[in-house]
Amino acid sequence: MTAPTAPAATPAPTGPTDPATTPPAPVRARVPRRGARRAGRTLHAGPLAYAILIVAVLFSAFPFYWTIVAASRSNADLAKVPPALLPGPNLIKNFEAVLEEADIGKALLNSLIVSGSITLGTVLCCTLAGFAFAKLRFRGRGALLAITVGTMMIPPQLGVIPLFMLIAELGWVNQLQAVILPGLVSAFGVFFMRQYLTQALPDELIEAARVDGASTARIFWSIVVPIARPGMAVLGLLTFMAAWNDFFWPVVALTSSEPTVQVALRQLGGGYVHDQSVIMAGTLLGTLPVLLVFGLLGRQIVGGIMQGAVKG
Image 1 (cartoon, helix red, strand yellow):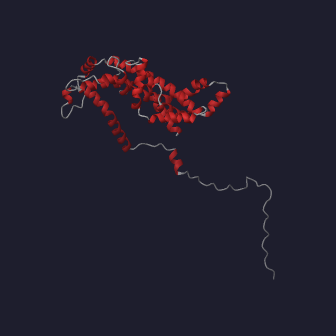
Image 2: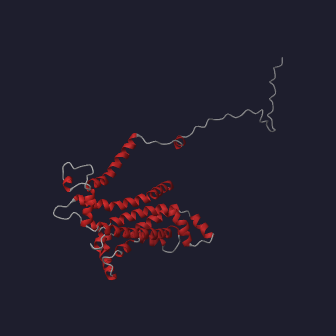
Image 3: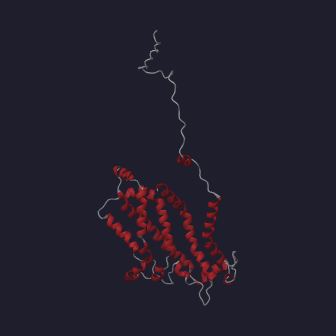
């Protein structure tokens, strides 16, 4: 009796398979990662974030609001306990007292000339120096940058006596150029623009301009300045505020006949009892130009901050 034989195995096809008869491979469901799901979702601030922002805004704006309240009240109103928290009717009267006690109009003009000149000179010179330190190759670049940054560690009070002796030799005492020229360049501005242009200015743009035959001056005005505009706006605002609020050097180099705003403000509210309302009115007048400059450069400043955040 013979045992049943197993059927012969069908040989596997060696030729090309027909895609119409080949069953499709199973498709696995692709599960997105947690980070990818979060990347496409818009984040919304919660109530706690809004509460913190509101408190921060109130704390930041209250000193300016109190300046307006104090400038529109009398000195007797400010001495009351509790003090008044709403603006009063004496704002115009206090402004007139400011104009009588100090030549605030001339002081505002002098401060605009000094601050504007220092801002323009600092932005231009520091952008040139920052471009040189960031993108140009020359001997001693690292040593010069280290010396420039090292001058930031020297207190400015140490240079007051030699600087005053220099302007006295030049005959510039009680003249605006004695305040303008020493502030035309700052080590902080050079370092700031160098760091900004190192990240914001690609080397490929400079190399392409060199291939096209552009000179260094043409590269600076046509390529560097448009790219560096947000950083220049930030540096300009910081420089203008520092020059406008400077008191120490103007009070040394100038007199009451050619004052800046900060020098003129010390003449207000004189007497045995200082009139705080008049002082606050003068302070309010001295603050308005800074707010105007911030309003003009605010968009560039925000753009520069956002561009630096994206590049970081």
